[in-house]
Image (cartoon, rainbow, N blue to C red; front, side, top):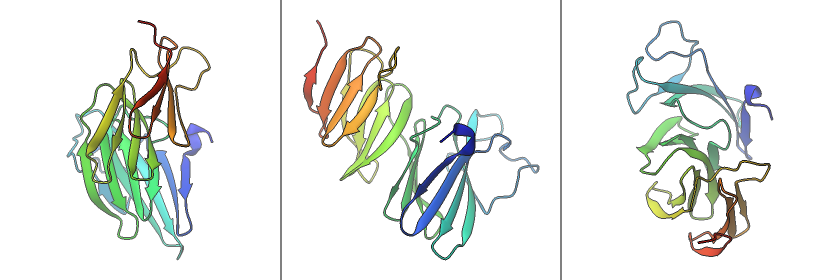
Length: 195
């Protein structure tokens, strides 16, 4: 899927299409129309923001268009997961939970963490966040459960995939090529770090 086309997330009762609205300006009268505008952090025109267009189509073929406004520095993929009837959305350090039946923002928070965040992943009792400086877990209330830090940033200089959840293991490479394997409780199982 190409970035320009957006991302589609779906399950048995909903299809959600997400893409960035690069033309949206906070508080402008020239924006394209949305059914709902969600800006819980009260970003203004002078802030550096990113607006995500979220189109929710339910099993009755009803469609709702939502503009979700967050930090400019959010990632281009792996930014949303569906948990039952909730869309959990990550834009950098801004995290949102949207009820997809009522089209309501039910929880939002700024995450306390080091560096940028690259992706969110649903696990059986919370969310794993792949961050630049740390990998960490949030519970369903968005409270931090654990964090794992490496020797360098969790991005790679080569073709290696820097982050992968494989079963009950998280496999991570850092900038220097060090490999880490941790379990879903954040405990280190193995690494290639040379002291």
